[in-house]
Length: 407
Ligand code: ASP
Ligand code: MG
Image 1: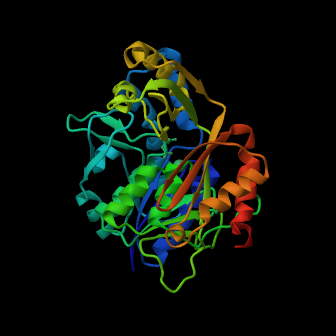
Image 2 (image 1 turned 45 degrees about the horizontal axis):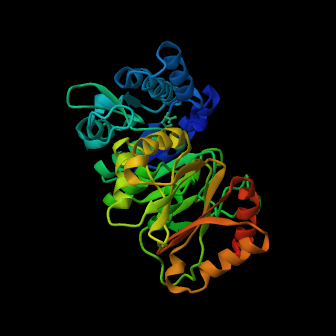
Image 3 (image 1 turned 45 degrees about the vertical axis):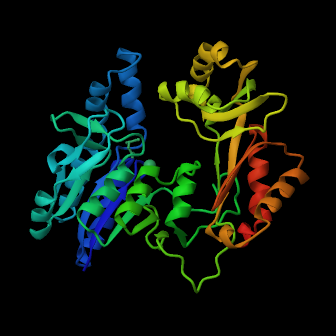
C-alpha cells in the first residue's frame, strides 16, 4: 500500500465524461489499497476564459482580484470530481488551496508555496477518503487567495507529494510521457522510459511544456518520485524522472531536443569595451523585471564590442525602450531586436562523457544551410538560436543525427 499523489491536467478533466473517467481511475487505485490525494487543474480552456473575462473589465487586471477570479476554475473541478467519486461509491472530500492550507507568499499570479498543512488531509486519508485538492492556488498569510503561475497545478501536486512524503507523484496529462522531442514536430519522436531530473529540468526550462519548471525544481529539492503518464490510456508506465543515472544502462549521449519559439533577440552594437558594460546594459533590463536568457558578448575590437541577449517575445518592445533610455549613457552605437528567432537545444547527461556532440550539432545544421546566430552551452545541453523559419527542419535533422528516432 502506498500514498500516491495524482495530478490531472486540464484536458484530463475537460468534460464531465472525462471527469468520470478520472474518478474511475482513482477508484481503481483506491481499490488496490492505496491512499490517494488528487490534485486537479481547471477544465481545459477555463483559465484562459477567466483571464479574458477579467481583461474585458480591466485591461491590466488587478493581480489580487485576478487570483480571486482564476482560482475558481480549479474550485469547480474539485467539486465535480468529488461528486463523481461519490457516484462511483468512493468517499471523497474536496479542498481549495486555502482550506488545506497551502500557504504561499503574497506575490499574486506567481506566488511561491511556503508550507502545507497536512493535518486535515491525513485525517481524511485515515478515514478512508480520497482527498481532492485544487491545484494552482494557495493562500497568503493575510488570507488572500493566490495563484502559482500558469501550469502551477504541477507544482501543487509535487508540493503536496513532498509535504505528505508520498511514495510517488503521478502527473496525468494528455501525452503518455516525456518524449525525445515534441511528436507534433517530429512524428518519429520516442517516449522516454526514464529521464534524469537534471535533464527534465533543462527540458522544462528550454521549452518542453510537459511539466511546469517549478514543479521539477520542487521535485529535485524534496526528492519527490515523479512520473508523467497519460490519463487517456488504461495502462502504461509513462516516464519516470530519476535522480540517479542507472550505471548499468547505456545512456544515449543526447536524450532529448527542446525548442522555444517564445524568445526574441536583442543586439547592442558598438558599446565601449570597458569594465561594467554588461552591468550597465543588463542592470536596467533586470530592474524592469525582464527575464534575460542567453547572453553573448564578443571579444572587443578597436575599443568597442557587441552584446546580444534574449528576452521573452512579449518583452521585446519594452526591453528596447529601456535600453534606448540608457543608450547615450552606455555609449552604444545601435540597439535592435529580432523576434523571428527560436531556440533549439539538445539535452543529455551523456554529453558529460562524450566529445564531439557540439560538432555533430553544428555540422548537421550547416548541412541544411541553417545559420546559427547564438550558441550557449552547459554541462548537459547545447542551445542555439536560429531563424524561426528553420525550427521544424532543425529539430527534425538533429533528432535523426543523434539517433533519437531509433528508440
Ligand atoms: N489552470 C491553470 C492554468 O491553466 C493551472 C494549471 O492548469 O496547471 O495555467
Ligand atoms: Mg499543465
